[in-house]
Image: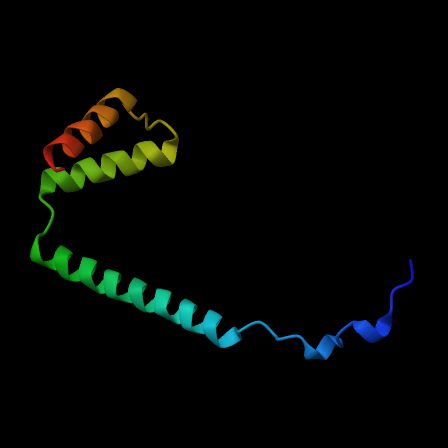
Length: 88
């Protein structure tokens, strides 16, 4: 079979990808991230962590860093189910 080159469109006739759309999507995502970061920062300033909670967070971080953190899958699943039933 012979390909007829006259029937093929020239390569420069194809539409290039819409780079403006990709840039807009990327910048929109960055803007969302900035807003969330600002929200988290403001919420943290309103409610400081108690010393007990801070110690627990540090304990969990150390266990995770050491590779000794173990997830209680049954307790986690139970809590997820309880929460989903409580807030339909």
